[in-house]
Image (spheres, rainbow over the protein chains, first blue to last red):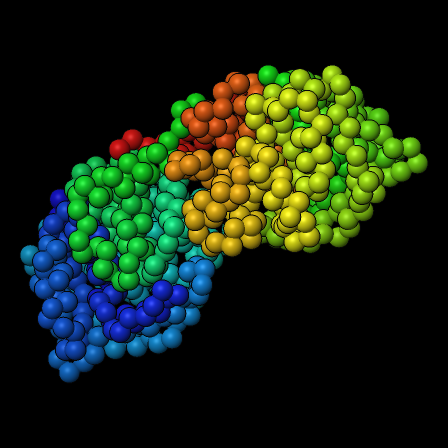
Length: 304
Length: 304
């Protein structure tokens, strides 16, 4: 079923204990699309870049099955740029540079050929932009999932709450769930947040895995313990990209199938962190993905 | 099969955001024994208390099937006492008082009737005392599991490394695994630590669950997300008590059965934190335990 994703397409410059990169392709929209492309193509992408964005990066997306009709290229402007340095434990990072550039005035235009949208993934952007995309779709998608972050809770909580009422699935991390709900217990927080709108809540816990909540149902998927985490950038977006891609491919939004989607998303994220930036998402084979999902089954499976 | 446990039997005074207690029964040996008693009795306990330790607490243990022949009562001396205050998030705590008392000179005498020991659980104590118990057993148990803590890594690392060579299963938390191995990645740490002696390693991650490693095999059991954690005291000891109790009951030390033992240990720990101190471990029903284990199965189970 048709899949529409919005999110930043940008430059990242990364520094981890393993090395550093110049400006490379990054952004939530990029990671979501690349990850989802292993399950379902085309991915219809709505995003914006500046004139400085290399044609080769656009072709990189196209080669993975991303439809870039909705990718606006702003003449005379610069692409969104983020630079960060990870600490030794990879769990915390310093933002060195954030240049909003084209993202500051992003008007998300939905091309006519994207209107038939069954699965909508709203990557992390200002809540107002996320809402605009929903408003511009003539028919409501079968499933709307959104990602967001603490920054919007700090400066645009009212807008965020408006969008929350319009979506089916919210995906945030544990600290964001606590901030949004005011509850420390994630189980209590899940109830508070689901009462704000989304019937399904995913709480990402990084190296500790991810929780899925829907009504009274709960599911937990561990993160795969890895010997080396090379670069955590984009892991959360890759996770949610795999989640929505798997749902769009299988066209089944039951809780049982969402559990599978969480496992596939976790598998994709486990690949993402093995190399710098998007590198590992460019050359994955189906065999590698199947084997990785089997590792998750071994890791979490027991028989009592 | 016969189960021998050593560990502190002590007074705790606890303060959590939910309230505070006077001196109540606590200690690793207490939590291990009470938890294991749901699987296998008698638990042969080797421990020491002072003259101040109430007879009613000893009877409390006896009523749960704990054999207290090996519980030394030191005339004119005082029991080990620990007092702590938990912070709002329950993940960190301040130690207010530690009075070693009888534990400072503890000589772990193993009664003759405890010699037929198949499963030995060495609760957290000085490594030298743990070693003495192993040395005093005429025949090596089928399985020796030990718990320890960062404190002994700081002040008695050589002794600790000696004991590590003698045991089958080590159970520590994630920070302790990092300290002991010098590795940040828990997967890498597991290899480093297993090379020190124990063929099986359990890494407890508190609210984030527990990992089991053996050779190249890995298993992860989540913690059950709870609406309220009332008092985390003893959760780790309760976990390992359930683990060893389940193994002793089933007398099967295969990796597959250790996975089940981890799930049962996690279920016991999830009960422990629901009330102050040992309270919740005193009145559990078999039906409650079975239902709780089913919750873990729902939480972690998926079909891909």
